[in-house]
Length: 258
Image (cartoon, rainbow, N blue to C red):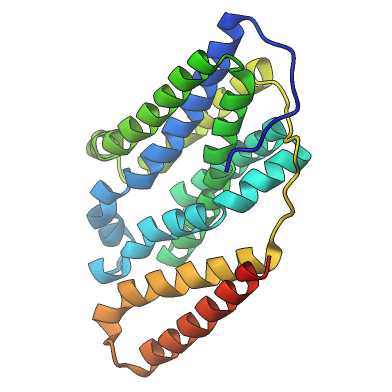
């Protein structure tokens, strides 16, 4: 949910569109990393010596954490400052990309991808809030949001193509190394162009709901990924079903009472 922002001085038109461009640049990075590794899973498995059935987490560790933390990241940005959270997200994303690029094992790679998801969650909703805050004219705002959405769609399509070029030219680690100079450039642009802003109505951070949502998504996705390999009626799967049911019930109960 986009929060109404504290009114800010109207920036010149060129400055406003520069903010949209910078936010779109960071958004493109998030979208590309959602799909860029899909083309290289075979190379990753061969290099790290793991089978194809264990590689789904390389993609899903990123997307699950990313999706699970979106609301909390947006609320945090409204509270402590959008540019601050946006900058932090870029730093986390860049450091995690370095860890991915140098990962010696699948476990390290999956963990680093999850941390990448943490950084990405600080970029997407916060970028949109920054754009909405800067674009005070309704017509300009509608155009900017349309551009913002188009950039994300384009980035998802560009991921496999970009990954294919990098892997064929270098190796699978290049799909993560490339993020480092991009993040550094984005940090400079954010410092130069993006103004600080906060939400006018500060939302309370829902820590219990956030924790339950993370467990819910991780268990659900884990069952879907591991079920074909371990068996849908295996003891681990049965435990997972129980955890999923209890977590879902607790999540509904807590959120219904708010």
